[in-house]
Image (cartoon, rainbow, N blue to C red; front, side):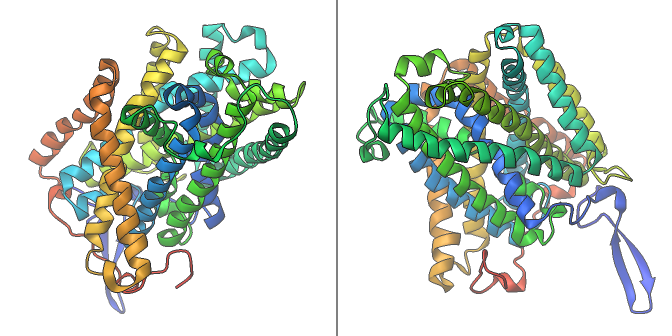
Length: 499
């Protein structure tokens, strides 16, 4: 019989009758991440410094002065998706997160494709993300060597392997590393946010002065520009949901993981908005586009000559390394859940006896990513690789976030109208998020370059292969198992407050 999370048990007799004990080889380390650590993971997953540095130029090119509006009007639906993840996690604490929730609330095939979207988007990102990690490190110590592709590639690969080792040997080590890296990163960004606001308000600046109209729709050059910017903005936020994939390893994970995602989205939204406004005000458009991979470093030099650029490059380096780690966590936990369900080979669903981590999945993903990372350097410039990767990942993000938003409405349909809170946070807001994600997914496809469509949709389509193979093998995952709500979730359901 194929393995299923509900089936991976052994029965033991006790004085009180039979009990069920989960087999250790199919479990992860419980309570390895604290509630505060879940927030840190969510922030690290979105990687504020990296996202701004790697994506600001693309966002400004697509939206111009409407860039802050793109982040706002994508951020609000994204927060609705975060609420969806929080409530779905209350019903089902699962390493696969959307893979399990969508499969149980909607249909197993849609659930598998949601998980597959996480796997392929994370893999593509790890290939693209290691390049900036290497470039930021080299720029910090030897700015004149940033054009040395083999050096940048080698340093990026080393960082990736170090993070893979942390993920392999235990979630507690991973959490400690994230505390250090993310605390330093956010502290640097917070200081510079204040300095940037003061500089823009009191000093001379090359860009236009801030206007509240930047948060409206008047600066968008048509619907196409808004959709393109929204797809990029989705990439900005993506990654916060790693807290949900760590649910089985988080203390009080049924609540803490969801709260971590919500708080994480709010934190990175504030950082994204402040720095985007600062970039538009302080730097001229030509400078932004000419420094697409180092916008934060240039901003730092402008507002704090001498040390400013170095400090922000340090923040970018830490952010990139941290998000490589959280992305690796997300993809390995998803593969672990799939292997445990036998929707991919069973070996992926086994954990290390000592470390209680998905060791096989971690080793395989690390090997594949390093090979693809090195090979990608022969496909074009770093800027081209990043641009194509961002857009293709944006498609995959929109796909599985939309399904999660729909899933929570379907799963909780009987309790949505029992209170105003339920209606807003379980029904209306997640539904708006799902509609928004579905819209940008569908509308953006006709205007995207062929390579982006091939990477984005082609990688998703490959998920049909394991579906066919393991459906025929009789995996019980593909049998309908409705998402059952615990007793405490069938009435008025607080998420942030304690029960």
